[in-house]
Image (tube, rainbow, N blue to C red; front, side, top):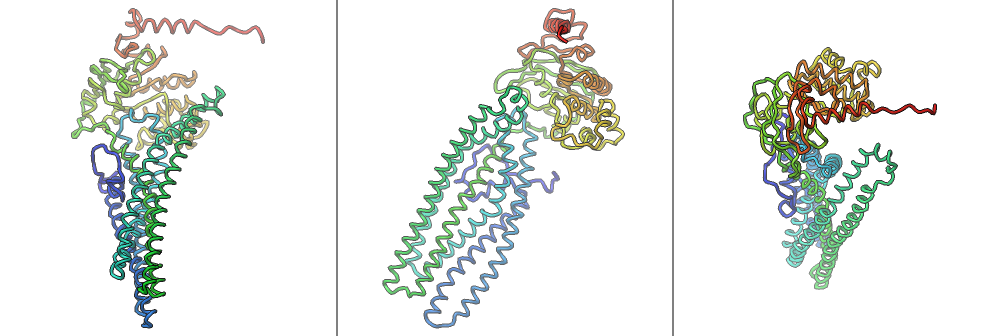
Length: 599
């Protein structure tokens, strides 16, 4: 994002968004708009106020117009007055509408950018499963819904509010009794509307957790289809059914509470109508109003009532944007990984060192006091039982999280002083779960280094064994969302090709050869040899072909501590975890399926 287009986001402490603090969404929307968008928003609301004042004046013109009709004087001046007001209101309404659309578009675009930039700076620990569904709903549907509020509803509140106040003031000049009626009813109406909005807000808050849980369960249900179908549970996934039932009950409660809130708005409007009719009838009975004047007063009262109804409905509509702002605030106020004010560059050697690193998830320790050095141009294999923290170590080196204590050094300096951009330029990552974009084979490889020449891309593809895939499918063939049109091994090859193309001095490989067939495993292992020639490799693996050629092996115990460090030959002759690991592998290799006698 360029500096001139970068949204000027007000910074603040964590807070819950409140309708009482920001009833018209000024501050909330400002955090998700550019300066240009905020100027457009102010112009839109200013024009909406002007249109409302003109609408109120047009309504009040009925009084002198009917007086002229009743007295037999000329009504032409008042007709011209109405025409001028109508033309001015039309012009201002046009520009207000255009400003509202541009404001809404700015909001939708900027909100996505702000949330996206924030997500890129959050530690991966923030992305819990219960947040993913709500996040997807926020960026796909709710930002659009909030944009509609900005375009259509926010201005309505200002326009009808201005019209209501204009009519109220004008009524005082014409009939103090009517003015007093308006003055009493209006605050009462607004108070009831505020109570109605508060009820709806509480109802929506109570329903939100169930909605988020349902979204998370839907995402889980979609991702887990292979396992569910294998188990015969694709039609009876109990967590999803339970979430649907809970969400249904929450929505029913919200519906009843919202209906009650709307009834309150209707009651106050009807109360106004009854009071207004009674007062108008008393004025007519006292001969203070002529028949035509009575008609005019009824018209003014109906306009006042319509403004009240519109404002009440609009305040209800504003709750949609309030909910979006509240959800966005939980993201934008979440603590990011701190960035250094003056990033360091390091010595450029490609070394990696962990010094007394301790880290855990939700106060549950995973790695404890881990220390080792991966020297430039070497291969370090990390082995250990499941849950020992092997993958966590690679994530800490990539600074997906910050360590609880200790230091992770890259190029001789603490990665917290390198800055994210510098650190990512030094690393390539080949993980077990590979994500490919819905683009061509060559485009997915070029992600590693977008400015690379075609020749460089083809060379990286050849080293990673992707050329054979391209010969079968074509370089420009789309791979589908997430790479679903390719096998897991083929996706892994493309991931390795990206790492080769990037030529990063440090490569992190997490289970790169697990669950691969013989052909794909051979291609990935050959590609890793190519990576070894240009980078420092830190490899998590269980297969001996990957481990035995490492320059050093770091063995973790079940409690996430370094148990042994050495080469394959050194560790195989020592009693400990690694020796037991080799024994289990040897036993597994000696076990084969017998041939069946039934042919």
